[in-house]
Amino acid sequence: MSEPVRLTSLAHGGGCGCKLAPAVLREIMSKMPAAAAFPDLLVGTETSDDAAVWRLNDGQALVATTDFFMPVVDDPFDFGRIAATNALSDVYAMGGRPILALAIVGMPVGKLDPDTIGAILAGGASVCAEAGIPVAGGHSIDSVEPIYGLVALGLVHPDRVLANRNARAGDVLILTKALGVGVLSAAFKQERLDAAGYDALIASTTRLNTLGAELPEIAEVHAVTDVTGFGLLGHALEMCRGAGLAAEIEAASPALLPGVETLVQAGVRTGASGRNWASYGEAVREPADQPDWRRDLLTDPQTSGGLLIAVAPEAAQRVLALAHARGFEAARIVGRMVEGPAEVRIV
Image (tube, rainbow, N blue to C red):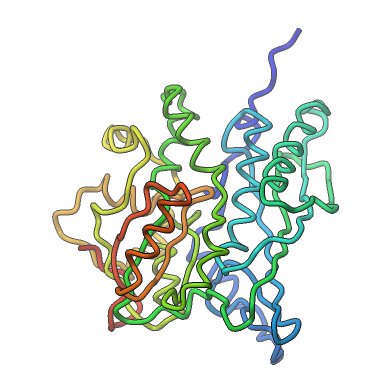
C-alpha cells in the first residue's frame, strides 16, 4: 500500500502565507474602477477591512467575506478546521455573528483520494458546527493544488460595526492570540517541529475568535481587525491608514507561541515575512538596534490569528478580562494609537 500524500507537498505555500504581498495587493486594488455610491454599503474595499458590510434595515447589517488557502498542515481534518476557523474570523472581526457558510473547494482529484478530500470538508464542517452555523452549499473544482475555505455570512447591528477605520488617538491596542504561527508552520515543513509545537499550532489556529461578537456591547471598543497573513505590523498599518493615525507597537509585548522564539532565533521563518517587510517596511519606524529575528516575528504571517482591538484606555482592562474569561489567555496590551501620519512605530 502506497504512503499517503503529504498535503503540504502539493502546495507552493500554505495558510495565510499564501496571500499576495501587501504592496502587490494595493497596486492591484488601486487599478480597480471606483464603485458607484451605495448608501447601504457600510464597509467596502476602501480601507482593506476584513469583510464587506451591507445594511439590511435599521437593526441588521449583513457581513460577507470569503477566505481560502492551501494546506498549512498534512492532516486533512486539521487543515479543514484551520481554514474554516480563519474564514469565520473575518465575521467576528467586524463584530458580527456568523449565520451560514458556503464551502470553496479546489482539489487535485488525481492525487488525493475521496476520503482525504472528505476529511478536509468534515474538518471545516466541524468548526462551523462549533460556531452554530451550517455549511449550506458551496462550489468545487479540480485544481492543481489543494484549496479549501469558506464564504462566511453574518449579522451585526449597523451602528456597531467594528470597522478598522474607527480607531481613535489614545486607544489601547490589545492582541488576543500569541504570535508565531508562521514560524511553527515553517518548522513543520522543515520537519523541525516537535509534538508540543504542533499541538500549540493546532490549538491556536482552530480557536474561533468568537470574542469579536461580544465586543460591540462595549461602547469603548472602537475598531477591530484580525491579524493574519500580513503579520501584526501589516494589519496594524491597515488600521492606521483607515483611521489616519499612527500606531506604537511594543516589540516585546505580544505573547509568543511555545518554542517560537528559539526557532526564529535559529533562523526559522517563512518567505512571507520577508515579503511583508519589503511591502510595507517604508511605513514602519523601528529602533536601530532591533534584531532581525524580532522583526521576523512582527511580520510573521498568522494563519487564523488573533483580534487586534482598539479600545479606549478606561475600558482596556474590561476587554482583557473578557478575553481571558473566554479562553484567550495570551491576550495582551501591545501598543496604542497616536496622532501622526499613517505609520507604525516600534518601541
